[in-house]
Image 1 (tube, rainbow, N blue to C red):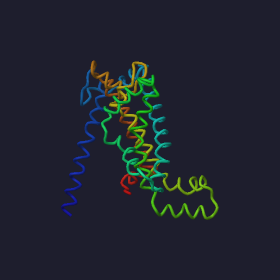
Image 2: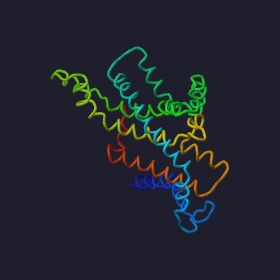
Image 3: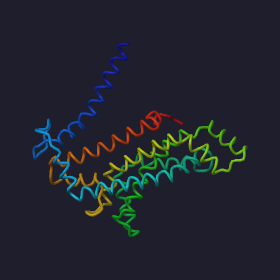
Image 4: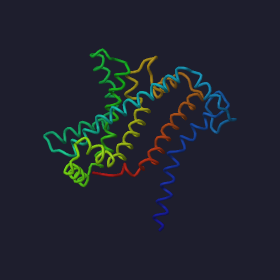
Length: 262
C-alpha cells in the first residue's frame, strides 16, 4: 500500500515537472509587458493578435499543416502494405526491410536533413515542398508501421482465411475484415505521424526558404534575433495543436493501443 502511494507521488511529481514549462509558456503569452514575463504582468491577447496579423506566421502555419497532412497520408500509404507484407509473409531480407523502415527512429534527423539536401540538390528539388514532403514521409512512416504491426495478429489471419473460404475477394477481405481490425493502430499511428511532422525542426531547417517555411523553423529563426511574447503565443498554439491530437487519439482509439507489442 505504501509503495503504491509513493509510486503515485513520484508519478505526479514527474508529470508536474514535464507540464510546468508548458504552463510557463502559455502564461507568458498572456502578459501585457513587451518582454517575456511569468507570472504574467496583466492579461492580454494582443500578442496572439500580432501573430495573426503577421502574414508570415499564417503562411508558416498553413505550410506546416499541409505538410503534416500530406506526410501522414504518404506514410499510411507506405506503412500499411509494408506491415501487411511483413506480418503475413516470409521472404528473404524481411528483417532487413523492417530494420530499414524503422531506422528513422534512431537516426538523427539532422543527418537525414543534410543527406536529403544533397540528394534533392542533385535532382533539382532543393528547398522545395517536394523535398520537405519526402523527408517528412521518411521520418513519420515508422510511427504508422509500429502502430499497425501489433494489430496484425495470427488470430486475425484465421479470419482472413475464413473470409476467403466464403468467397470474398482479397480487396473485399481487406475492407471488411482487415481494415476494421487494424483501424485503431492505423488511427493512432497517423495522429502521431501528424504530430511528429508538425513539430519537426531538425530535418525541415535544411529544406526551407524565407517563402517556404514551417512554424517550428520560423520560431527557431525568430528567437535568434528577437525574444518577445509573440514567441510564447506561437508556441502556445503549437502546444494546443499537439494536445488536441493527443486527446483526439485517446477519445477515438485509446492511448493503450501504443502499449501493445508483437
